[in-house]
Image (cartoon, rainbow, N blue to C red; front, side, top):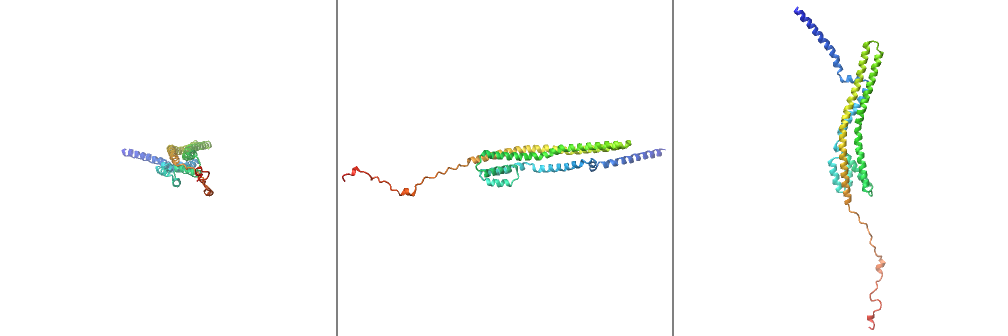
Length: 277
C-alpha cells in the first residue's frame, strides 16, 4: 500500500512539473524584447526612427558642446598677444584655423574693421555683440531638437494607445463567443500599452539629456559673453593708444624769381653826413 501511495504521489508530482514547464515555455518566449516591440502596432515604426535620432543627437552633442568648442584659453591668450602686437591680419588668419564660437566673433569683428577703417568703435562693438548673440542662439537652438522629441514621442505613443484600444473593441464587437472577445481585448490592450511604454521610453531620456545640455549651453554662453567683453576692451585700449597722425602743413616756399630780385642797399638815399666830401 505504501508503495502504491508513493507511486501515485510521484505521478501527480511529475504531472505538476510537466504542466508548469508547459506554462513557463510561452512566458519565456514573450520576454523577447523584439517580439514585444513588434506587437506594439504600426506606431512603433515612427517611435523607432525617433529613438535612433535621439541617440545620434545625444552622441553629437556630447562631442560638440564642449568648452573648447565655444571658447578656449589657448585662443584667448593667442588673440590677446596678437592684438597687443597690432597684428590684426595674423589674428584673422588664426581665427580661420580655429573652429570656435569666439573665433567667429573675433573674425567678424576684425573683418568689419579692415573693411571699414573709418567706422566708429561703437559700430565695431555692435558687430561683435550681434555675432555673439548669433553664436549663442545657434547653440541654444541645436539642443531644442531633444526637447521636441521629448514632447512628440509621448503623443505618438498615445496615438498608438488609442489605435490599440479601438482595435480591441472592434474585435470584441465582431466576436461571437466569450473566449473570442476576451482574446481580442487582451491583444488590443497589450498593443496599446506597448505603444505607450515605447513613447515614454524615448521621451524620458530625451528630456533628461536636454536638461543636461541646456545647463551646459547656458554656462558656455556666459563664458562666451565674458570673453567677447574682454576682447572688445583689449581692442579698444589698443586702438586708443595708436598715435594720431599730425596733419601735414606744407611750408610756403618762395619762388625762384623772389631770390633773383635785388635787395635795397642801406646806402641808397640822402646821406647828410656825406655832404661836402
